[in-house]
Length: 175
Length: 208
Image (cartoon, rainbow over all chains, first blue to last red; front, side):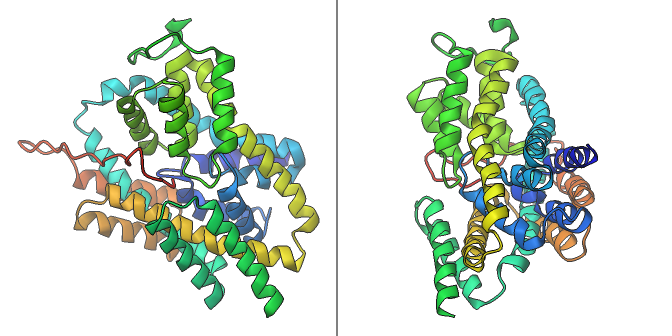
């Protein structure tokens, strides 16, 4: 029970940090699940995060995997509810009063200001993720190729990401 | 039934049933492979079912992007609420989340069995490197939409450095940088700032 409570607390807290996307919560996700609670190692967390990018639906479903690793199916269910309920209620409530907020003079300031901060948080997340994912020249090259490909073409990201995995396997076989 | 729906403009045509809402979102939740869920949402909601027009879609997307929470679930909540009130919001979100949640639960069990195998480790490490490329693209797309001036870039770098290098906890960074950034863009007398960050083009592949 204590574990389920911890899972609920951690993921409810993380959900409130997802300003501008799930990646904004990545730094705290790493601190809490790896360093504080030792639920997963950093490579394990990276693996789940990356698999989560391939799964359909919201791109942070890896929280469910961590819940399942810690406490089985109940853990998965608690992680899911904790991660989506608090922000869900907030969005639902604000969505209803939005028409009144639309003409509020501070709204453009908040939208633009928080936009810059969220880009900064995503950058921080990418740097922290890079420390674990880019452990050599090959991995840096994979990341750069996928980046350029996704920026320049309209290809579904699932293909280059799965191809990256196959390159990893190939490298393991050859080296 | 409709008294529970939001004060927003009513959608045209008869309101879909709760079961229909759940089903449509379940299909989108199961098929939106590879991120870019926004494109799938537009196809499902605007094109196929005609539940929203493009103007409303973009407006709801702009709310979703401003508030905490993921775009996919925020959109499910806002659209579900418009169609069928709180129950619509709940069922739309459940439909959107269930397929991915079941897959990632299965992934956790599979990982427990095969995750230590060197071959799967090599595969997963490759995927992680590829996913990093995706994250940076998301950041560039988000940045091109919201960053307007030099001050915005300073905010980005200061926030990132504080969190990634000086280990400032995200909530503190969020609040401190948020206050500075909002104050910088504060409404000023005589100069109405109408520039809000524009929303992503609905047609483009959009990775958030």
